[in-house]
Image 1 (cartoon, rainbow, N blue to C red):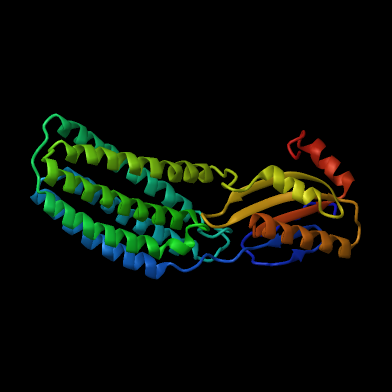
Image 2: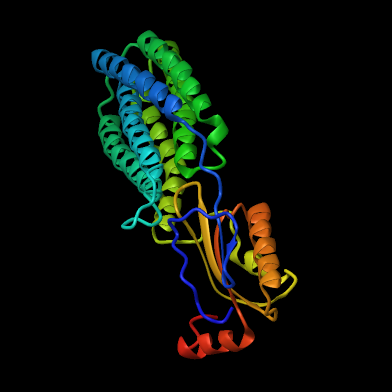
Length: 323
């Protein structure tokens, strides 16, 4: 238990290894291929209809919503591609596989939405000074169809929204689209009632605001994960205390937690123990892996056991960086 022992992250071993390392893995995320295929097909068809009628009746609100739905289609394609890439097996050149593709997809999905909304917001501000007439019933009808399609698409991703940032992004975007379509319907009704031509660009700006607010969290979280930040919902101080509370563990150092993808969290740590036999080492590794999985849903843990003497040597050698 004295010397460091490198563990190949590409190998899938559910239990502890040798005398110095333990390595655990979580389960693969649920399949969403059918949900992606249906969601993309529905939204491509609706974007074509919405853009056509938005152009025909000169409604910026419909065109704004169509632009957003188009970016959502691109986001769904990105997310689907990333999910498929993440299933590729690890090899000698990519020992963690391609799981990080899902984080990249979430980031570019959010970036795409923010850029698209900036462009639409600029156009809406320009139209405030010169409002143009439109057709209320057409807006209401097309947006009503949007409510149905966006709600149905959101429901396809409902069960996976808690476990995967990619899936949560798809769910939130579709749910937001449904709410935006409700707003467009209300705007069309008010236009029929009062004839307020300025309402169309105002609703467009409201749509932009709602989408930017909903997207900002996805953008910041995905950017945070790209730089190996501790995933949202994992408290590193609590993880340290959890490991320190295990029988036989005297100290914890060199603790690192990061996201392998949008649904898998990885951890490495050095555990200082007083035990000297294989049975004690196996007990510590098993207890640590079970606690990390049960309390923090960390299924990919690589743990190195050390004696107090070796831990002190590590700290001296790395000038305190192990702590």
